[in-house]
Length: 363
Image 1 (cartoon, rainbow, N blue to C red):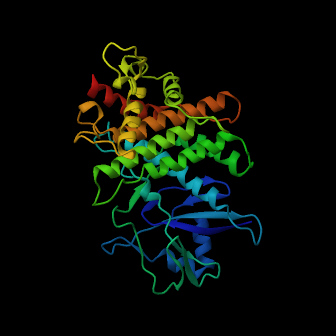
Image 2: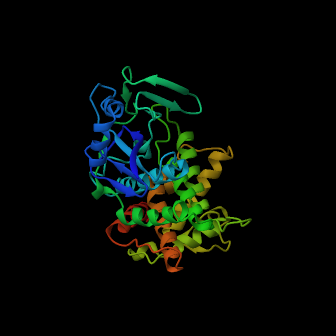
Image 3: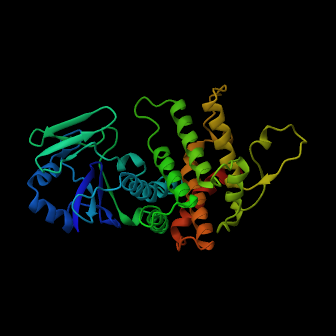
């Protein structure tokens, strides 16, 4: 077996490796990278040719793969799914802490985990690019790699990641891609994670409008719906997600209080019978209501992106709420004996604290 460098992420610099055999996401000082660079001058030169928009050299994170035998190729879906779950471990926590911390972690968008389209070829002499728009081969000497122009290159510290959630997701990933499980649950979790990865990217760059934020909310809602889908020809309804968000034993008891009217009951006439819901359900209901308005072309008042007429945007709560839903879904799966995962501790409180900001706003 040998390790091969198969992709780079120039906008991100990890402080330590993240392993999920046969893949690993590693910084440039990792011993395996150093060994590869000593044997592959093309790769070594390539990794030194990345800069930000102002000409400052950056140190890209590299994804490596442990090839079992000569001629084998990495599972591309497995590679991207590995990237998705690592990104969520950082981004869900960071975006949640924007609501609670004075100085939240810097890696707040999944864009930092974007895989660069160019990579060194198998001959170690040329670089290749395969995208829907480009099929190209070029020499390494003239290459000048760059970070994404809309974000600064950032260091990602392991202490800022939701390590418990990451370990849980890695267990699901291994069941899907190592054990080759065809069960619905691991597929649903990882499909949902992929949707959340896209939802947690920046809605747009300098040309962002409310429509871009509305589209991102729609992606978040899809991530929830995929997560609770029963499989087969089953259907997903609002009550399925409400059921998931009502099930956790929240550490902050106020999150369990069924003291709110949630969508679609908010559209009923005064005096009509409504089902009381907890705060997480209220937030998700507002996400769904906003999704419907944006995606279906309904009229949009100026404050449509604001939660309950407060100064808080609906989308600012989406990562924390998804963190709760994903953690709860994984715990339920563990209790059913399908995967041995744990997800307790300080990181789970990060999402709850963020949701409490909505309580202060709506209270």
